[in-house]
Length: 345
Image (cartoon, rainbow, N blue to C red; front, side, top):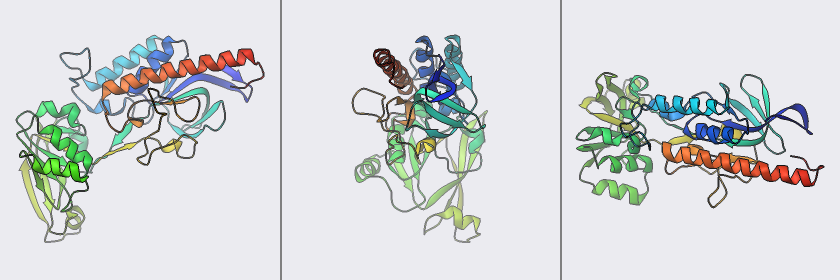
């Protein structure tokens, strides 16, 4: 529950959870059941990336699949039923060098928290092609592991040239008839081993010096094709927009398109705090089976600290872990304060 801190005469929450995707909702359920009265800041994209997925078939307990938005809403309802509070707000700045922590919100409000769970996720990079807003989740995806099984027998495009794109293409080769990697240069950015694996796969071909400019289809039919532009010297979109006559334009059929241009962890508000961030921007947790960070009282959950798995089920798992870790840390802190009433926390 809220309390007044020695360091401020304003209310202090036991736990504030930043982010409302699967990780944040799982943390909220566990924290609320522990009577920690959590406040969940939903952020600019309530529900996270899962709200862009129409069908989730690999989440435990839903053998017939479940709509991504429905799964998120069920999680929110569950957390609220246990007493979690939600606020549609975003953290702009965080002061984490002293406790209680201070969070400055976009709306101008200020919060104080004893423990902070960062579950802000990661945002997939988009390429800006016409039609991507309408068709994301309808044959356009940023996660082959999530959606690849929907494209059995399809001819699909993978956009990108790094390790993410190669991973998408290789996974899709289990399902799709053909995979065409569309890359704006004439060489890959991927590591040698990933590039070699993709090149050696007979189902994967490459379109060099080519970019996607339009996705064709509808929400009723799904993705049906794409418009590609190419130029011998690469980076054709800029040349195409400048009216370069050497740019070739082509329409191709496709049953699905996957963006493999990476993800950006949503950690901007932590940039000036003592919480360590990896070179990729992901929040770093301590080694071992824990969600703790180097800053006592700050915990990470979900894609914001996971550059590898990026699955709803693993995010939910780390969300529950973060809440349990926060509960244990607060209990230890309270026990310490009971033994030494002069200690701050």
